[in-house]
Image (spheres, one colour):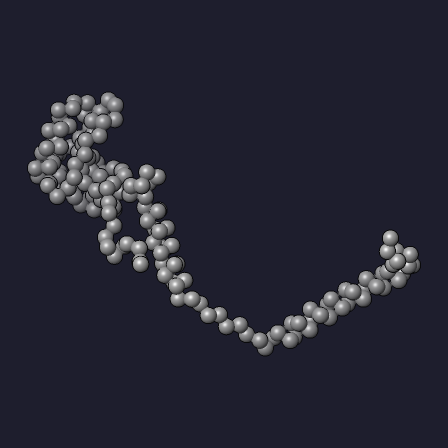
Length: 158
């Protein structure tokens, strides 16, 4: 046992009050002493590069699907249960729009023919206006995972 356990209760209370008073006194003195001090931070310039890389990585990750492809849009030209019709439509699209890739998807029981890889729905809508001359009905802009490789200026910094 400690020796102060045998002291009268009044002495213990006074001792506790003195400790509290000293603690407030030390805190007050430290605030007064530090009032004129200032802190100067020197930032490493490599932190800016690291922050930019993290920003680009987050931006790219937000645009991607879980399987590593980009979120985008395609134009669905045809949905049919006839395989031959789907591949004929694909060949017509390839002949008229050689700069755009066309895809035939099978989602039982239908074959779907889609065209293009667009990041923005506005781009897909503008391109859809060109297709309306060939196919008059059933053309939709649909959200899909697209093939996309970012341009050089979007690549990570060295």
